[in-house]
Image (tube, rainbow, N blue to C red):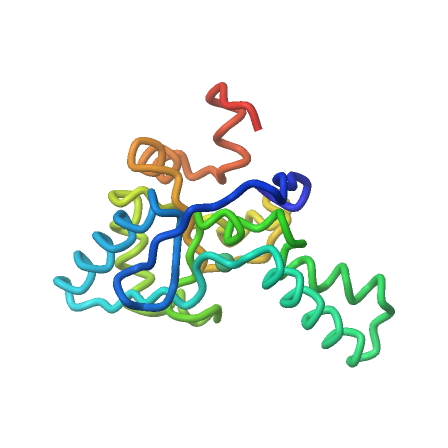
Length: 179
Ligand SMILES: [Zn+2]
């Protein structure tokens, strides 16, 4: 899902808390994320859900705050909206609104230099997660490189997507999925 595909805001996401972190994912995804956290911990790596499920309203507020920050830097409203939307998707289009994605250990690019990121690159697919917005794929995904943003696609698909080196929007149509 991306900025061009908005889900029906009446779609109700059933969430489940990730351990006692105060963060939630779709109840079907939470067990996979918990298993991944546990496995990482055994390897001496801490994975902490920084942002997981976000409500439609929360997404709206986030986007507005970002837009205003850019306006305060002198951008026009339209330009500020465009810049903000390259980082925060409009409400109803974010994977966070569906409880399928999680930002791990924060939202900063230096995350790619951490042990946690290296571990995720080796193992996240075993738990059904993929790096959703890779480096160099900005033109395809429409989203800046986000080493922290991991999306659940299931344990059947994640290893295949990882192997292919493709993004979700490139992989799915090639394999007969409708998007
Ligand atoms: Zn994210």
